[in-house]
Structures are given as structure tokens and as C-alpha cells.
Length: 375
Image (cartoon, rainbow, N blue to C red; front, side, top):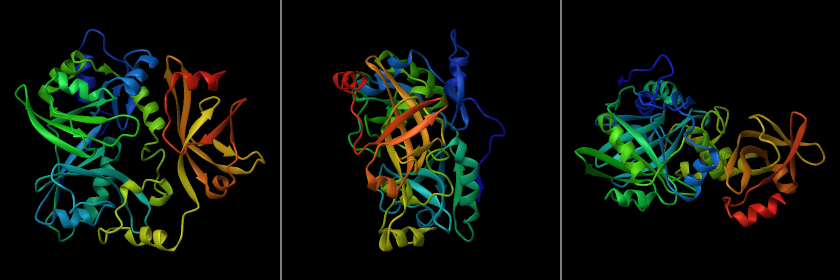
């Protein structure tokens, strides 16, 4: 049985609602099925906070669901691609949700707190995934219940630990783990999520404590950052978003996100296809991180080899603005034969053209290197 109220229109996050009542409300834009602040400052200042400082930002577009009932561990383990039963206390794992044909229906993060199980799902996926999961609660003692009382702020950047320290809050050294503390009369859950270029924290608090937490993080040195800069940073980190970089037709191994797969956990929906790919062969295309030299292309833009042969297509792209210049990153689906040729990739946006190279390691942001690339 599922108890979950689905929104009928695009809602404001709690932070957006809080800031709307201020003297200088931030411009809002749709993001993951909600309206959230788009930007607070110049793009280079917001990017600098993410890349070399500490940024505080909205995570109110994330929804939490409790998984309850005697069969919760067994049932949930059979519905997702990563570990559930083996999770340590106060630990989490990112998962894909598949159908019987092994196609990706969405993604979520499973968290364990003692014997309690929770799922974090982006707001724009909640309706679809809840319906999908609910379909498979048949004779199981399982209930999915929305946890609507809490909301979250993000704290991202290499100096995030310094900000937590100034507030006398504990840091979490291991990604995908959490700790719960009492802070100014509120229960505060501090989650260290997955990050490539910088630590990513989630700070979950009751809605009544949001204003105080927002103000405290800013006072402690965190710079407010909107969804535009967050999205550019996500793409630079090579972290895919469902609905853009991963879609329903995709197979798990095509996404190159092996961190979402556990090959020894036992049976789950779609597991036969995942195992067949692992044991018998490979897929013929992969999601890859790119750096682009040219204009920012739209999603769906074709990539071609020098011969003109199609090599793949862009799924998402954005410019990352820094004081020392602007760099363009993208995620793209690349055909296997194009990767083997190791040739430059070309694309066209309007009357302009650009080139792309596949990144074999996360990007670095050395100002001298950037200057050389732009000269």
C-alpha cells in the first residue's frame, strides 16, 4: 500500500517560498519538477564557490519516502540494482530502477538508518517511480510513505568542511554516509553524497528550521548558488540526470554508471538482462563526459567524425564560467566504433561549429592551463 500525495502543478520549493517573502526575491526557474532559485550572483562567482570554495543551494526538489513493513528489505532489494540488505547503518547507495526488459525507469538513492529504509527521489520522477514500485507490492507487507516534514539544503565545494566546522557541526569523511545531530533545537541529518570534483553534502532539517539553517550557512562562509550554476557543475562532474542523459530506452551498462550496479546481490527486476550483458558481451554505445571547444549545443545535437560519419549525440551541455574564462562541458552518448577510432568529434550549432574530446579523467581548473587553451 502506498500513501503519497502527488502534486498537480509545479510547486515552489520551501526555500523558494521563503525567499519570495524577502526584500529581494530570487528569480525562479523549473528544476527537477519544482521552481527553485535560478541564480543569486554573477555566474563566475557562483562557479568559484562550487569549484574552489563552498556553495549553499536548494535541494528542496528532492523527495523522501519511507519504506515500511516486515518485507521492506527483501522487497526493495528485488526492485533496485544496488545493495539494500548489505547497507551499513547510516549508509546509502545510488540505484537504477529497471523494468523486466532491463530498461531504465528512473533512479533513486536508498538510505539505511538502523532498521529503517528510506528512498530519495527527484520530484519530477516521484509520480512515475511510485506507480512503478507500487505495481510490484502484491502480497508483500510493504508501505511507501511520503516524508513531507523535512527539506534539504545542499553544501558543495572543497571548503564545505570548513563551513560545517564554523557551525560546530561534524563532517562526514566517507561519501554515501550520514550522521544525525541536534542543532539549535532541531534534528539535523548531515549526508555526504556522491561527488567528483568536490564534496557534496545534504543537510536535512524540519521546515521550521530552514530559515535559520540558510542564514547560518551563509554567515559561516557559504555562497548562495542557483540551479543554473549547479547544472553546469553537474555536467562538468559527469553526473547524469534521468530524463536527459539517461532515458527509458537505455540499458544500465550504456550509462557507464557501474556505481549503481551490484553484481552479487541476488535477483532483482531486470537483473537477467544486466547479467547477460556483463557475462556475454558489451553494449555498443556509452554515455561519456566531453569537453567542447565551441558554442554550447542543444540536447540532441549530433556528433560526427571527420569523415562525416555519425559518432553520437549530446545529451546535456553547459558553459562553466570562471574568472579566468569559460569552459564548455557535455555528456553525450558515443558509439563504440567512434570511440575506438580516437578521432576528434565535430558538431554544428546554427551557423557555428565546434569540436569535442572525450574526457578520460575528471577536468581540472588550473588558471594557467585554461589560459594556454584559450590562446
